[in-house]
Amino acid sequence: MLQVNFIRENFEKAVLGLKKRNFAGAEAALNQLVQLDDARKNIQLESDQLQAESNAISKTIGKLMQSGQIEEAERVKSRTSEIKSQVKALEDHYARQENELVQLLYTIPNIPHETVVPGFGAEDNEVVHSHGTIPELTPSNNLPHWELIKKYDIIDFELGVKIAGAGFPVYKGKGARLQRGLVNFFLDEATKAGYTEIQPPILVNEDSGYGTGQLPDKEGQMYFCNEDGLYLIPTAEVPITNLYRNEILQAADLPVKNVGFTPCFRREAGSWGAHVRGLNRLHQFDKVEIVHISHPDNSYEALEQMSDYVQGLLQKLELPYRVLRLCGGDMGFTSALTYDMEVFSAAQERWLEVSSVSNFETYQATRLKLRFKEDKKTILAHTLNGSALALPRIVAAILENNQQEGGIKIPQVLIPYLGFEWIN
Image (cartoon, rainbow, N blue to C red; front, side, top):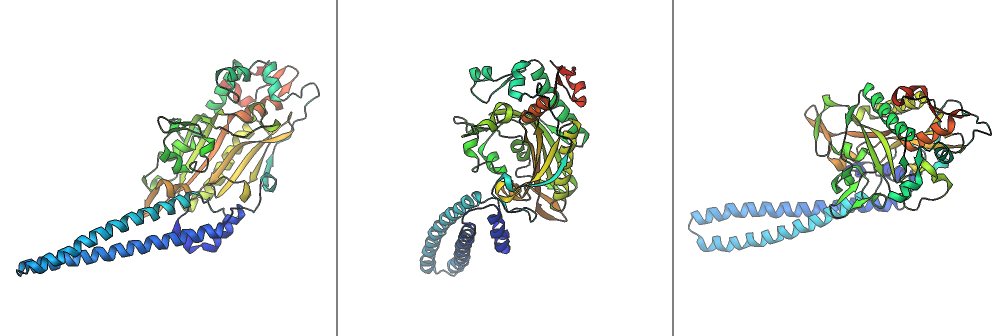
């Protein structure tokens, strides 16, 4: 979340940034924050003054007792009881003000980086790079992936409905091996690039959800286990980043680079239509996630490196792609700058998002209390994460873009992981 001192020192910048996001009532919300902070400080000042008076009275009582002025000492002592009562009331008031301040901070998104343009949605995003040639399919080999998976019997949505419901596919035979092969390929590539593999829990507590900003912003999109107070993760970002909650690292330890494979769970409430058909949007899917903990001076260099790394994976998979810099209105709640990578789906004739790579600056670190020591100073770290990669739309693009008369040709880089060259 944002820091109140930053808002005080950069009020106009914060207002303009939130307006890029189309955040309603930005100026009023930030003014309310400052007022709550002022009230909190005034309460603390009054409490400190009363505590100082109490300390002075204690010394006075000691002197009176030593000089035999017992009656006067008892009279003065009654004032200390009054002060204790007043301090307790102020502490309760301070706690209420603090809670109100924090709850308001939870509702305010991150300030976009200066390079982020204003906008309302996907149509306002900037294309910053494109790579590859869009395949031209023949009329006889131009099936969308939801027909290909039936033709080759590799993914079964009906069985998923039987077991769990819509959006929970069952992968079979070469479909299951393609999933496993992609995961292993992504993990191996990440390890080569210097990432440490983590296998985290896929259930997290409320503190973890608040730590990375999924709560309260996306509470309605997360599956919740009511009896245990645990959430099914929407992405490995949540448990991996929370490994460092309430931690103080050393500057020499940075950057920290982790990678993890997990299933991911999203309710996707209200999703419908052709754009979410087949693998385009699921309630459960597999994803490999990369997470960086970075020095603030180096975080944007790290973001570019992460973007280049994800693009390298897409190139090895021989998929045409483009890179978008998201506008203010299309960015995630916690992000300061996000690049989306989209692959072209030939049969659907549209771009599919397969990765988001984001720099959160100190937004998550403030919630997490994730810091590092440098020159005897304790400094908030910057956090970053990216999909490397999410499997469903990658699988959809591989199936659609590589369909031929003899079946679906597997990208060369995956053959050692799968043990076959064709799905047929």
